[in-house]
Length: 107
Image 1: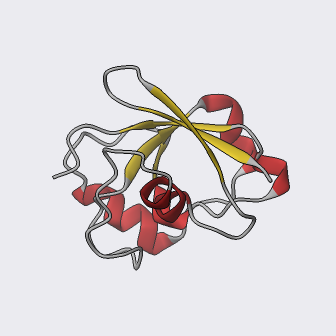
Image 2: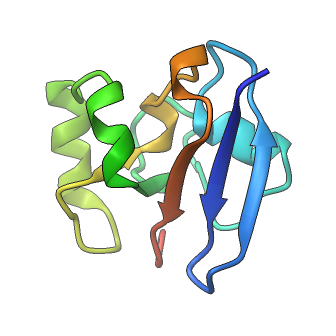
């Protein structure tokens, strides 16, 4: 099973096995990773699952949809070029080792 690495604002790393097709937001919440709020449950209406994707993984990801780009305008932490909503990042085998930094604050 592929793994994702979440880096908390304090530098703590959490490695979570993620089933293919599962969003990083759901993987974080079920894996006990703190810092990703996901108030809306993953329907892209709250922007509280904001992460910064490590640069080497960006080319492996699908481009964000127009709706995700719009929601990224409402994140509590300033948007960066590598900003994504973890509810929109679905795990694939090709993303094994995907590393993201959890944005702070989320609310």
